[in-house]
Image 1 (cartoon, rainbow, N blue to C red):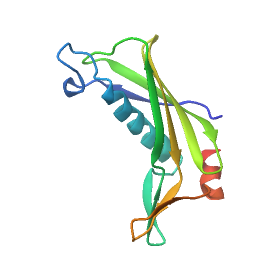
Image 2 (image 1 turned 180 degrees about the vertical axis):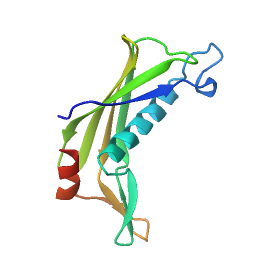
Image 3 (image 1 turned 120 degrees about the vertical axis):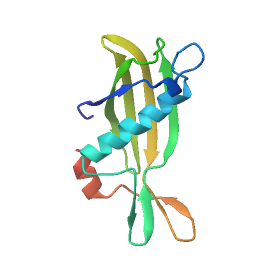
Length: 135
């Protein structure tokens, strides 16, 4: 749907296991960082206050398929593609590369929600002004 947006991320020592390989859970953190940067590049955020309520895009589904390991000091390019802009949700694809090597492919779905002062969370239709920024 959208042209890919990319960021680079250097693998830190704390991201790795005893063998020096990136622990699988960190790919989900990398996806979140890339998603936040993608939204910021469009003048948006993952979470904000509006009309006395919290608004944002909490995650409802994530997956990651691993092709080969990434290691301490590797520089990963993470490309974000907005694959689907639904009525209430966004679906992204994350392509992880080290140079020409495909490392992993992740997917994430978020739903536009509000959280009231009473801590009730409900999904809502994505407003037209947000849709325009993502187009």
